[in-house]
Image (cartoon, rainbow, N blue to C red):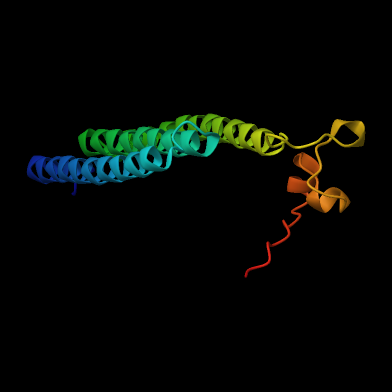
Length: 160
């Protein structure tokens, strides 16, 4: 009769494989983060909401990847299939809550970005009702969230 418990040598190999994979993913994520930070720094976008969203995204990715590898480590060490199934169920429940919070944080940053885009540009004149207008074309060219949310295109500047 076969046992539900994994052989110790198989478990050791699996555990080493999980650690090697974790190290490789950490290296790649760190390299990607460093590249993104360098680009943001050179373009001066690191303090803007979009830059903050990128930074948060990398932080969330790191947290989620760490959680997955922690689960993998626990699964390798699980004494039987029943325990492994329970670990998996607990992980899914916990991660669902964590990801919901992460999405909310990114949504808040996105809304902050929309709010900044809706502000009048320096030197813009306020039209009736206090809205800054870029020209007489109404909502399509109006500064503010109404024009931006309506998906209005900005008029192109003629090329010489």
